[in-house]
Every structure is written in C-alpha cells, then in structure tokens.
Image (cartoon, rainbow, N blue to C red; front, side, top):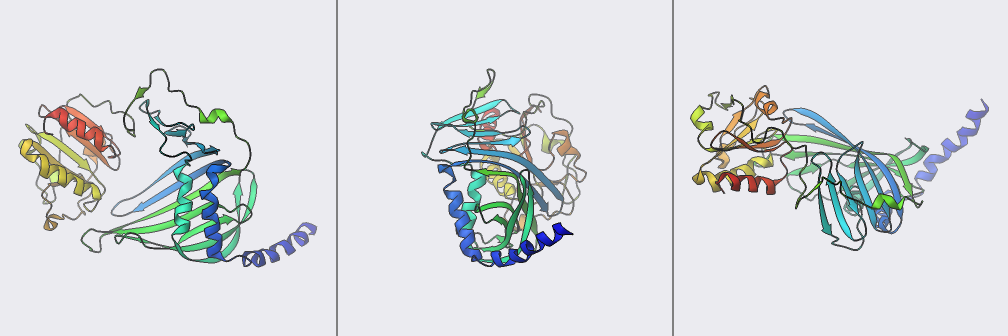
Length: 369
C-alpha cells in the first residue's frame, strides 16, 4: 500500500510535465541533438521491424549496434552481419557472408551512422506534432519515461503517402527510444493497386556521453578477405557456374513458356513481389537496350493475382511462379536476379536484387552488353 501511495503523486505529475514543452519544438530539439551526436560518444542497440502488406505479406527484422566517438563510428548487424566503420581516416564496409570488404577515403571529416541520422532528417521535415500520452519504455538499463509524440511530415513523394510518425521520446536526453511509421506506395499509373509498409524502430540500449572502447573503431580485414569496389549483400550462391535447373514458367495468360523462349539466348530472370515494383521498370530498360544482342528477359511474380501493365508500354514478358518453386530453385525468397548464359550455365545470382554493378559485369561476361 505504501508503494502505491508514493507512486501516485508521480503519476499525477507526468501529464503536467508532458504539456510543459511544445511537441513540435521537442521534435526539432531531438533532431538537433542527433545532428550533434558525432561530436560526442554514444552506444545504441536498435531493433528494426519492417512489415510489408501487398499481394503477399511478410516481415523482416534486424538488430544493430551503433557506436560513435568524436566523429568515428561503428555500425554492425547483430548477431553477425554487415559492418560499417569510419576510423577517422577511411570508411570500411565488411560483409562476413561473402568475406568481402571495401575501403574508401572519408568524404567528410565528421560522419555519423545513417541509422541514427534518420531522426535528424525526419525532425526537420516535421510539419506539425501533438502529444498523445506519456508512457514507460523498458530498456536494458531499466524503465524510461517517454513522451509519445505524433508527427506529421511534409510530403516529399507523390507516389508515397505517409501516415503520421509516432515517436517515444526520452525528454531528459532528447533521444528517440522508439518510432513507428506507415506508408502506402501507389502504382505508377495511379490505380488503386498499392502496397502498405510499417516500420517500427526500438532501442534496447541508448547510452550517450560515456566512454567507449576505442578498439571498436579499428578494422583489420581477415587474412582471406577480398577487397572489392562495391559491397554485395547476401551470401555467394553455390549455383553460379552450374547448369540451370528446369524452368516451369507460365505467362499471365496461363500459357507455358516454351523451351525456345528459355534456351539458346542469354536469359535474365528478375523476381519481384508484384508487377508494380520498380525493378520491373529497370528490367524493361535493360531488355529494350540488349534484346538485339541476344538477351531474353522475364519478370517473375509469385501469384496469378498480379496485374500485367503492358498497356503502359512495357514489352518485357511477365511470368507467374504461383507456388514459388522456380524462385526456390535459385534460393530466392522475395526479390532477386538470375542470369543464365546461352549454354544454360548460371552466370549470376543476386538474392536481394541490389547490386547493379555486378550484374552489368555479368552481362558483359555473357557477351550481350
């Protein structure tokens, strides 16, 4: 009973404290605080959950540690994954899955981890803000009292409609300890087809102004690591150099692609979530440029429910991989790119469909570029 009586006055005071500061000014103060982080020391652990809702639903989650001191920083995925590091002189990036790294000169004297600078950018684009409530968040160090602020952002993309972003702000330290935002991406042609995405970022550790281990800002590549010009994500596929498996693909009209469509020419398969994805436009540009050089390109979507957008001027064929069998044969779960040469050998696989430079080199290797 005594514990409840002691806690009661504190609970009554929380709303009064929350109203003492204008919400929009608080958000701008937080943004300025993140902009100045590179001048101090910090140690954060964050969890990012991304939920995608379109024709198919899925979610991804990643954990990161972000440490900085006097302009140096280290950002790494946990428990293991890509590492980004600025040691005061060079920028390093290392992908343990592929045992590859990059080394480039610093573009600026003071750099900070991009995963934290997002709070600076959003803060300065805030159009309005309002206080929703006061709420406790549990961190590894214990509970932290936060003001929950809803922020409406200035629109920057006609195709993307953002919901207000909700921030859980530690007012005493001007830190965001949690954020949640949703946005809807409309189809290129303005139709009702769209995808909804929600991103939630939360911090299990947020320490600022305390000493950090300087050894965190030193990087020595493993003895067998390979220096590359550009990072590639996702593990190297063991299928490269092997014969392509049999491909059973059907067009949107239900008719199967014949063997002649898939053999005797270099075949570029682009797997995407739906036919409104931006990767379809990139594939169309590649197809138009190189089909005269012997390239066949096919855009592969996972469900028969997808809409053909040929009326917008697309000429690249669209295929249906209704049960995901073809994608699974190449180790692709969501998006990806596969290049097969005229002899049926797999030349290139990217399970995330991100590295256009390596794809360009693979196309050159097949002789179509």
